[in-house]
Every structure is written in structure tokens, then in C-alpha cells.
Amino acid sequence: MILLLTSLFILIFVHLFSKHAVNDHPNMLAGYRSKRSMQSEAHWHFAQQYANRLMKNIAKCLIVIGAILTLLEFWTGYDLWITIIGTFILICGLIYFVVKTENALKRFNP
Image 1: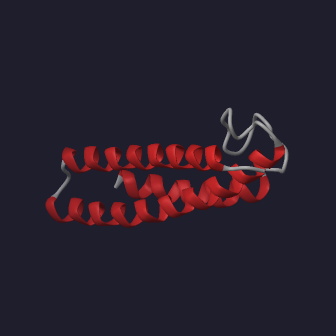
Image 2: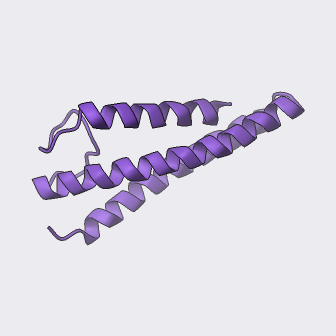
């Protein structure tokens, strides 16, 4: 259940936050921030678009996996292993997000 709820929260947060809080200039408060993404405004703009789209896609996949794990949890009863597996999948999704975004920024030529 933790994966389903966390993924739903991430999807809603990214959707709302990206429309209102991220602007076209690098800042220290909102958006995808890394050394590469803050190199220039072009890098910043690319990183925000890429990271936003990627995180929404990852969150949608995690919601599906989380729904399956939640159904399994309701069917078999609460099992700590289901929670551990869900948490592991969430962490893998977040690592994939950072690695994929950084690799895209590495290849980006403004």
C-alpha cells in the first residue's frame, strides 16, 4: 500500500508543483536541481521539461505496480515483505529518475 500511496502523492505533487512553482530561471527552491541543471537557463529549462515528463511516467508505472502489490496485500493479508518490495521498487524508480535525467543533461547541447 505504501508504494501506491507514495506514487499517487508524487504524481499529484509533480503535476501541481510543475505548473506553479518552477519558472524559467534556475533557483534554489523549486524544480530539478543539480550541478548540471543549474549551469545555464537552457540547461535549467531542458532539465525541468525532461524531469517533469519522466517523473510523471515513472509515477504512473509505480501506481500500477503499487495497485498490484496492494491487491496482493489485501488478498494474502499484511506481509512485511510486500512493504519491503514496494519500498525497494520506489527507491529504484527514484534512482532511475536521477540517472536518466543526468544522462540526458550530459548529452544536452544548447
